[in-house]
Image (cartoon, rainbow, N blue to C red; front, top):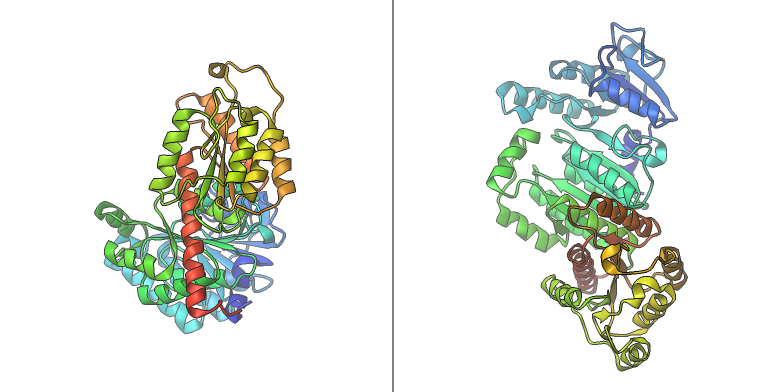
Amino acid sequence: MREKNRDFVGFFCPQSIAIVGASTGEYRFGGTSFLRKLQECGFPGRLYPVNPKAREVSGVKAYPDLPSLPEVPDLAMVSVPARYVPSVLEQCAAMGLTHVHILTSGFKELGTEKGVALEREVERISREAGLLVMGPNCMGPYCPGSGLTPWGAIPGMNGPLGVVSQSGVLTQRLTEYAASLGVGVHKAVSFGNGAVLDATDFLDFMAGEEEVRVIVMYLESASDVRRLLDTAGKVSREKPVIFWKGGQTDVGAATAASHTGSICGDQVLWEGFYRQTGVVPVRSLTECVDTMTAFCLLPRPGGKGVFLIGGGGGNSVVSSDTCIREGLDVPRLSGSTMGRLRQSTPQAGSIPGNPLDMARVFQDATCLNEILDLAHEDPHVSMIVVDRFIPRKAYHLKDLPDSTPAVIEGMRARGAKKPTAFTVDSDGGDPELAREGALLRSRFSKAGFPAYPSLARAARALAHLYRYTAWREKEVTRTGPPKA
């Protein structure tokens, strides 16, 4: 662990938390909602609501101010009106409470002189006193492993993902979305305006966390792009950084300014940033989740050749086009593979090759697993996409046992040799089909095999996986392996 990472323990693994501004009034977002979510998730540490007018909040003894607490807590969550935040920070400094999360908004993001001045005061006090501050205007830290899940997926799922985000809402959605697919989050941070600790500080922190294998970053702006560029380039050589840049249009940039007080910068600059650092750029929540799922669950590919296993002539044509457009290949299979496919593929209604048009693979798990064995042996195949379907009347099929458990069992027995993703197409206006599709995709993903609602989304995620792998191998060849 890097030396600096030890400074962040108070954020992510606190044994005690002071919630400054917990209210006894009507339940609404703020200190009280954070307190109740910590109670709901079973936070194992000690909770200290701070309210000068209350004896207790949500059944927990309250204290009039920070100096009256029975101990110096590891973390202070601050949810008082913005004008009172500087005095709370001074109390923290006086008692040696160094880790502070400022939930309160009303600072630079307002675009007013008063808001800017308040944020400068927060920065001044924090730097002079050596306080480590998240925010203001942020959801703060999240760590399922320590029971710290006051937002997002509750109680959450521990796993290989690290999240660094300027947006609280998007950080919440990422943790929830990831958990629904069986992808756990080791640590996440919503840092808001980043007055004291910014995106680069948390990116560097996640790089030093051994349990974090993949980093997702949502960013609207950076106060020091050169420092971010240097750090991101170093981190990308150690582990993938999936980078979602907000404010890429004039309207988006204006919105970002009112969201976190961000100045987004020239898009051309950011395109150069991507090229130099090797980060993986994404442009939407779905693309971000699709990509992080592939990086978390799949091994690195040895090339860009994809074997498409499914059915339907039209599907085969458009699937090939989609993969090629994403920069992948749909190669001819080896002579040995083709010979064995011709033996098992019916002459009528099926087409052996790549893509493989063979309806039997949808119903017969043994047949599918035999074809997957062939794919893993074929030197022309680096990645595999397997189409699944939800039985319905339009297919004229008789009722058959669910083949999914046998397919998953075969995948596990084969081991993680070549990246293999599944697609379950349930798009359209049928809510029942959408529900069944989501459930089936979740079954595969929670078993450790990413599943996507369309070939287009699967192909883009695999293309990101291939390009990053190729970039990293090139960098390692050029400069040597990353330092431990």
